[in-house]
Image (cartoon, rainbow, N blue to C red; front, side, top):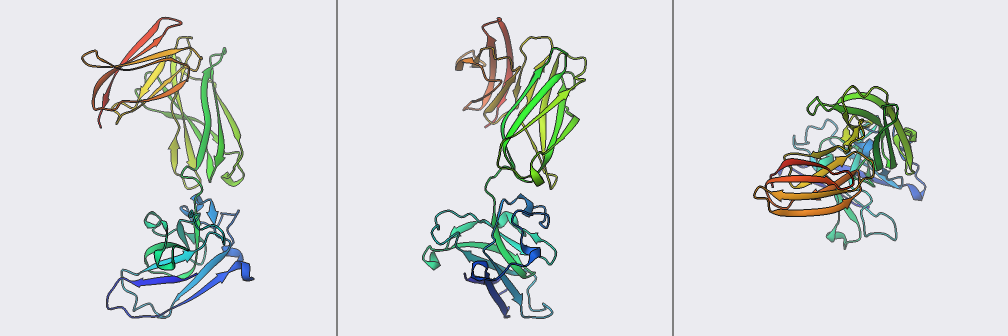
Length: 331
């Protein structure tokens, strides 16, 4: 598959030697470059990739021995590849990986992306690695999912012993280190504290099967309400937060409406007791904007289409409980 090298300095004239190795033709990728399944020799960005080519790689060498002719801006390197002999319709690979002599790395990751190259009759994908200044082996990789962890569910419930039982599950995990459990007491005004940690059950943080987790908060404090969230941590230290779950220890239903202000999307999280909830959204004049009845979800999302200030009223018809919260929408 061809390679294009574009000089970024108009006056630059120099030569490169490019060798393309196709593994299927009998060339074996060096052991320190065979990364499929074992991602221990990847940099932090590359570890987020779920698919790395085991079919081909390119050796690109700058023939200027001391590199003096290479401009300070480097060169743009474009690799062309086929997903397979029969599939040229969706780009599996979206990033160029460069081997720096020790490990694979993803340079300038945010600037990369694959597209069909019309100059090759639309029969091959092209990925551009901009402003490259160092060379040696290159290959391609991609991510099957934008999220490192796909959550199936997350619940938090009070127990008769006045503890909080948290349960969650994932359908897939990629480079997942584990989950920190964070709690916000009702009198702390939005501040969360880490109260525990559960390591990923996935081998090397990677799994495509359902995994189940649990945690018991033995000492939720003296307050009647506690809010919980999970801080999912990648191998590279990146943190992603779950939705908030509410636990009420006196048996009454409690709800949390967030974020506030919002750009329109509103989360309503409440005690997971299965009771029916009616939702009314009114503007400041009292005009009814939305009404949703008989909601049983412990976490419900609604969208408010226009900027302004609104009242969200939650009504529990089975108990007669009602709560009202003012929320600001900033589109």
